[in-house]
Amino acid sequence: MNLPDSAILNNLYVPGLTMPDNLFEKKYIACRTRENRMYTDEEVSRLPECRASHPHSSEWQLRKASARRLTAYLEKKRQPLNILEIGCGNGWLCHQLSLISRSKLTGLDINFTELQQAARVFNSCPKMKFIYGDIRSGILDDRQYDMIVFAASIQYFESIDSILDLCLRHLKPNGEIHITDTRFYSAKEVSAAAGRTETYYRSIGFPEMARHYFHHTVNSLAQFNSTVLYDPASIWNRLSGNHFPFHWIRINKD
Image (cartoon, rainbow, N blue to C red; front, side, top):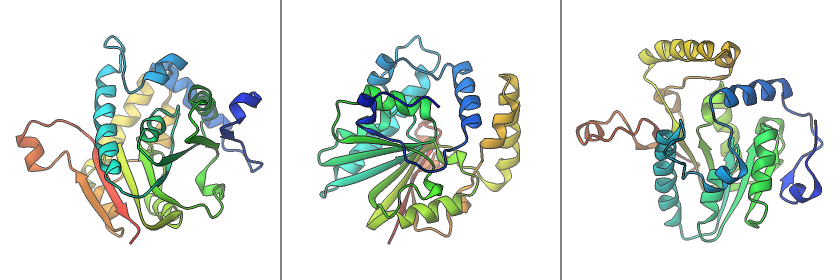
């Protein structure tokens, strides 16, 4: 593995723990490249703004809307916010959340390629730092946060129970977990959704990636103190013509 230069290491921590699965990362990056989801540094610095001609411009409009909703919600908090984003990728959302007054951001990911880019692009922002590793490895020790965010990332964890139980241990009293930009399904929808995922990854030449993508149900959150802040299937949203496809779910520690 090629480590970044010292300038990048100013805000990127690479611990001396067992490294995550590098073979998975190579496949993941190759897949994202095929999907046109790898961006230049300049493009990352402007996200979620994206040129209209980009193949994922409509998706970025959705991501921008969800980021604005989350930011507006967090801005109403009176206390300083120490925020952890799990699966931060190239760091664009960490950057957006760092614009909240009195916020401090930590981005965590096993994708070293995009994490290096995040550290490079946002190196001048003193409110942001990045950690390379898997939260399940104990990398965070006893650190606790006011907010933990999963934005388009919780679908890469097979057991939603175990990852959320772990995150709750890293929350301060009255802390919150926010899950955004991920589809949740009813029990009867899961099989068909998994089939579509397999078909999609096969069509782009990466059938093995389907094994790393998991389809969670809303009912899987029943044991947690959860609140659905946005439900795309609600009668109100359907009648109002709001076609935003992702749930926004808050899980409270207490």
